[in-house]
Length: 180
Image 1 (cartoon, rainbow, N blue to C red):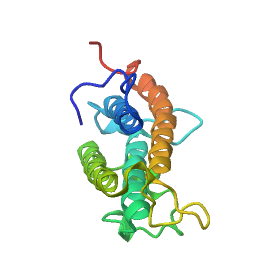
Image 2: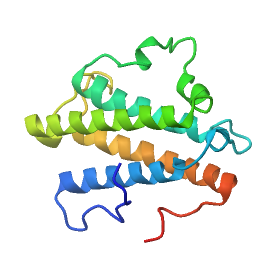
Image 3: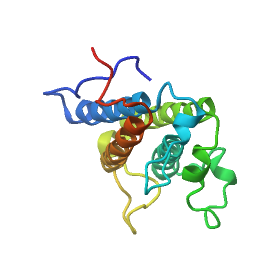
Image 4: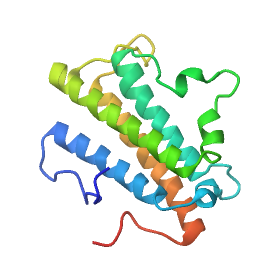
């Protein structure tokens, strides 16, 4: 992850740099919100939810691999996702993420983000934002890379709000990033 959270995507950038800039910004916000916490901090919940920062980060790792590996390129899920019985435990990543060591969850997420960046760069070089996914995630219609990036931004933005509340309850940390 970049050491600094970008304030905004390019103000007058092209579509690709704007979308990727925003995706990197929300990734960095989540990294900051989940950074520096010990196991107790990563396990903390905020009533009435059982959501933890560890579970949230592990979920985002799954979504990175799912959207940009499985959906976009049709690749099978890598470990640990390939060994999960999703029918028996559909919330496995949320449930286990708070139990896992923080370094393990951060590494799992960081590796998934790096794979996603590579997958997106490959798709941009082949077909740009119009590159269609190999998996028809929307009924019979395959989404474009543009749609997958927008959906990923929405996923991060929604969970950044959850992370805001949980992190504030742990140690009072608020804001979108460290002071500049």
